[in-house]
Image 1 (cartoon, rainbow, N blue to C red):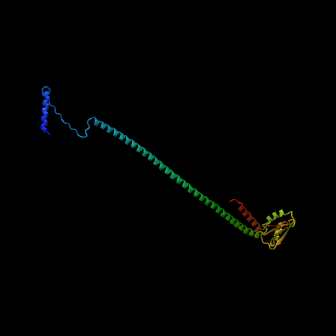
Image 2 (image 1 turned 135 degrees about the vertical axis):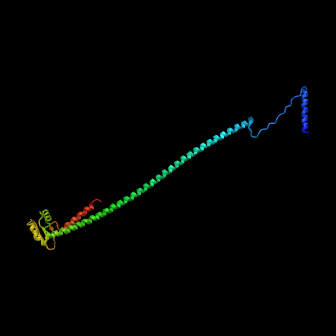
Image 3 (image 1 turned 180 degrees about the horizontal axis):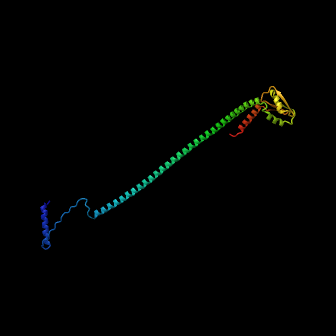
Length: 243
């Protein structure tokens, strides 16, 4: 191996020889300098292309990110709308169910009220029917006491009823009027000589009793008999009356 001095001397000799070949005129020597560059420094056309490719990739990536964000936003909006719709449907369904439940309960309460009213009407009808019957009985009892007392004071109290009955059977013969024996004289004076009527005083009869006897049947015109007929008529009317 040659040393660095040998190389340098060799270079000098080569240069002299070269100068001799060029006509013996010595040529000026040129020394090339080494250039150093920092790593990562963009220089040269290759590095510019790499930068352009990186910029395009970044732009595409940004576009993809933007599109993805838009898609996610649209999906979120659609999900929000769907959730709101589901909430609204749930609320409406709950309201409808509550309304149906309330309507069912109202119908049940109405049915109960209707049944209660019907029972009340039935009980009221029974009550008033019983009360009316008792009132009729009480009224007739009071009337009987009053009439019996009046007949004792006025034995001829039934004269008007007897006259009407005698007029209806005047065409028939053998009419007998039975009255209490103690009242026979008063009845004889009241009726006088009524044609076709035989007056008989009956010891078994009491004040307020009077019977008309004919061929076709007897008619009791006494106070008690008339009150019985009045009572029967009242009860017939009560039974025929609509509830």
